[in-house]
Image 1 (cartoon, one colour):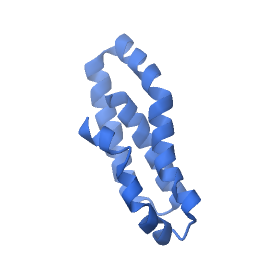
Image 2 (cartoon, rainbow, N blue to C red):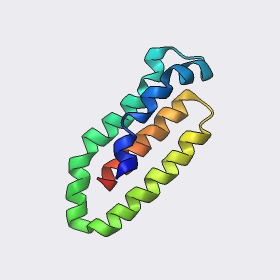
Image 3 (cartoon, rainbow, N blue to C red):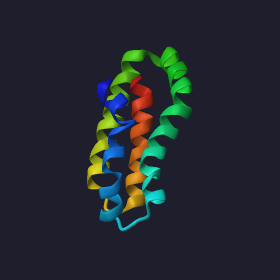
Length: 98
């Protein structure tokens, strides 16, 4: 739970460095944070209902696996847009865990 909560703000610290690394504007790099927040905010209620239907334990383990896989993809992302997509998947995993 700590990782999913920390994930909402941890990328903010790295935004200037990421802008340099990907040679992108700050507005483009902000999508790294926005993709995570949009995914978690829009999906948390529906995923909660899905947990009621399918079982919370199974869904929690799925969320942990998805969050971990997406975190690895974030670390390996060669382009900014792949990083943004991986952060959106990370947001989905965080919504499932919550």
